[in-house]
Length: 413
Image 1 (cartoon, one colour):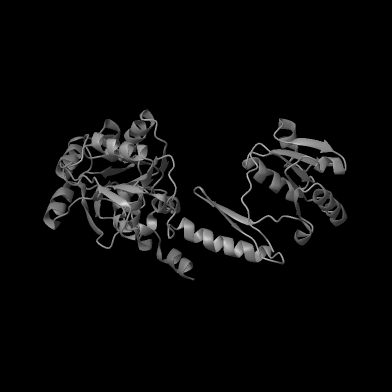
Image 2 (image 1 turned 135 degrees about the vertical axis):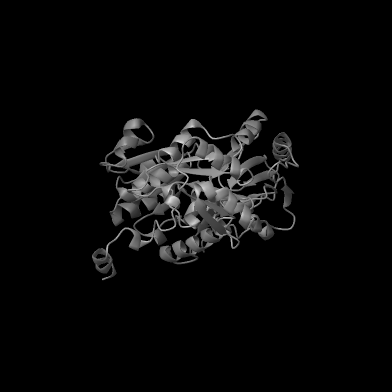
């Protein structure tokens, strides 16, 4: 019968017998667990040599002896020689030291489980009875997939130190929320959420997760930024895991940097999960590549609140870069007028993508000079991404626009 244990090896002496690739993999795992690793082998593979040279491990050249096993907490023997590995296992048995025998898993007193780390959960799978590593790996992968997809409640059940995680939720489609973001939500006691992004995932949270809505709309900020920061810090100080769910990416006009500073100033642990930014995914969802070989090779992202910089004006006027403007729907007329006054071609292709990647996505295209009027006529509303430049031309990706009949025939065949 096999007993599955979690063994704390940090700061404890462990022995790895063998200097080949299998031994190297085990050494890296043990070092990650902060064990003091001793290697006994006549020679080391290329992966182990720098570890010995740097002092990360201690190396005793030559054959293994019984004395090497005495006094260590754990042994992994992987010499590639079954007789030698069996002898090491017998010595370990004499010294009552747990030993993994890589040549014959059934002959050792311990086995290496198939493991996966998901957040602060270590998942381990072993077979009961005869070893079956392939099955263990298959089961491990299936279980880890469920955890990483956020389909299991990973919240702590015992008190611990609170923390804040800023999660970039992406442009709106829940399937564009990263696995790491979903895992953070599965670990959350409190979620502080904006109105944008994949808010439908909130319905999947356990009913006792506290959800605090702090979303802003154009010109209407019911919860000031400093109050949002206070909410994050206060809940974390109560020992809760707090997720700050944002649309797009936290560090692209998401004021995520301010929230990180506030948490650090308060001594609260904080980390950031990147998100798929609407500045790039919004145009993509509308079939607009922000760069396109032979058309434009750069993109400039700005916002509609602060006015257009000289670089933004030059990007459109000179055709040097695609201009993507976030949070500009409400003052689109002002944005387009500023560009035209700076000398931009009135016929420059432009587009606005509303509610990108969601079932309610809508795209409005028009020449720059007509964009504001067209959007007003269609009742375009925020949130929307504005794209200005040659790549916004509707026929850009139409093969008939740049391939002659002969070339099309060749591609089709």
